[in-house]
Length: 112
Ligand code: SF4
Image (cartoon, rainbow, N blue to C red):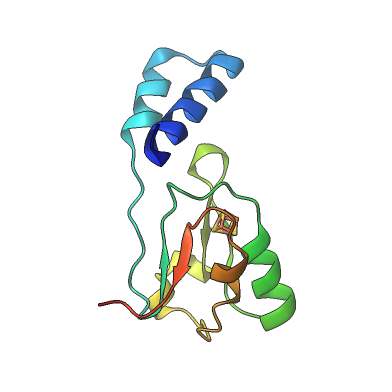
């Protein structure tokens, strides 16, 4: 089972547990959030993110950087002030967020 299938299965399990209407389940599964690759070194894929908050914590406490959570519920994702793309934020490109991310939602490295 690939990563995307596991994510979909997890979303279905949450919906079944919460007993939400099928229309809302289909709506949630159909929405894939866009990958933010605007930064020259760091890429963020919100569909891989498990919202553990490690990147937000390290960005705020160790670097004083721009990462934080935005939106609520199923729409929650790691974002910057005013939901700007990472490339337009005050990111120092330290790479600490990508280093602590346990699932590879934040990845750092030179893009080819
Ligand atoms: S460390 Fe990774 S999984 Fe955790 S909130 Fe940040 S991007 Fe999401």
